[in-house]
Image (tube, rainbow, N blue to C red):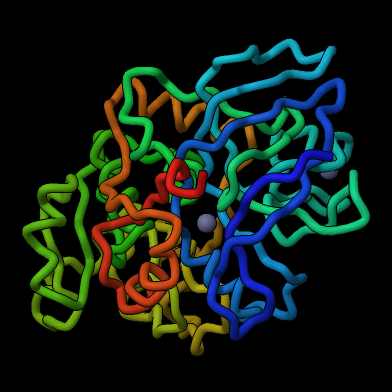
Length: 348
Ligand SMILES: [Zn+2]
Ligand SMILES: [Zn+2]
């Protein structure tokens, strides 16, 4: 075991503070990574606060990890010392169930091991995330970062990026399609960039007119203000696909009316009950409501390679580790454009 510095919360009301955690010794297929940057995801806050059921404390969040390989186990073939790598939301899975065999480790039937707050197979405790100096991860869950991208701004691709890329990719978004992105935050801003890069006509769907200019800069061809009834009517039945990134419960019926025949709306933000869906909005037009959770390791690498080719990174604001509690306040107030990234040097 190696002791490393980390930042975490001791209970659901506590601020995050510096602490010491232990990382396992590098096993034969493990990669040890010196963490240089870690993105701040809304899920970090939900887990710290036990919003999704009781968390295991201390919680050391962080699943948008970028760093440098500093040690590899004897059997590691995919990475070597000095490689620039990433780790996202997953650090392990059974590797033998039908989901794992289909490159869908996030849906491992025996339970995936999440990067933080998951039972750790190798210790008696639970996993600790990227708000720390180092992490040790099996090589099969480590990703290669394209060298041409701004490393700091790559970090959020590991969660916000794959969360939005995967559904757009799965539902075959391409030139000739009309795609709506609902909500402009950490997820929505990535959705706009990807949809635009995939060649689709991309429309930002938002409640606030103030976001129009930024949405266009990020890749939207048009902006639809959802409070404007006439505008909503003029787009009725015209969208092939809608990516809904709104992080809280809301009425999805107005968006279903925007879908074309055989259109799909995919939910990626709200992990909570949604108000009633009117069956007519699905039946009339053979429409679907779907959901999507991050992506498997193979697809996450495809997303990173796509970003390398298209020069896509996240729009970020850098912070020091000690500013994390203020950053959480701002994330909750939607006051960040569009993702905080922690400079992990500030923890040394
Ligand atoms: Zn996340
Ligand atoms: Zn599995």
